[in-house]
Length: 291
Image 1 (cartoon, rainbow, N blue to C red):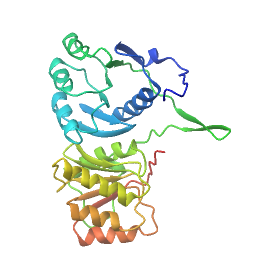
Image 2 (cartoon, helix red, strand yellow):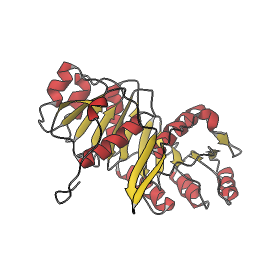
Image 3 (cartoon, one colour):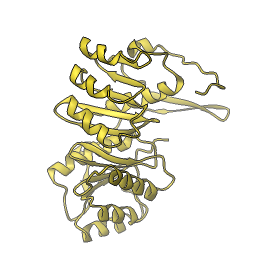
């Protein structure tokens, strides 16, 4: 992890990847790669995700991979520097040319054209990984205190059918799509987490905060900093809102629909605020804390 720490990986990476270029994969690289693979598995449509410190700083789904890349990068081009890129479609020269314009540590895809590899291999230390269909472990474990903590991997992903409208206003068809999209990202983000999304693009996120309000405010500030419009965007939360403050802040920023697990003793307060301000809200009944 750091020069003063020794580390080792027990496993067979060749079952998961073919490494096509670059330096030895480090401890921190592996943590980011694991987060990237878990995240991209959520998406079937053409998608690009950019991760930094285990969290998505940009993600977009588009008909073309090059457009998905451009819109993923637009969410936070600053954090993308030195990050990990993952795609669920083959990388061609057009996409490789665009990616090569920034510095990044790792790029992962199911395959690369010869021309794309020629472009990406110009940086000799750049790690290029061809992702195999190896499947992910069903159990997760980590060492702590004087033992090992083991739990089932979180494999539940909500669809539109899992979303119960709890407000007078129902989300539109396009909002439902964005709610499902944002919920997939917030599931794979460090808690406390908020994700804002619009038209198949992660507009911004607030992750790893001790306060959900801080997570939301950080996401809004980031969107504004990069000139991204939040009017008509949706908000996803990885856990319930204990008060109505988050839906109020979101509504004032232009958010039109919200997805959250529900289950707070004060759910009614958030629902009433949404009803009074023409915001649609759905509950999933499933919490996705990621610690």
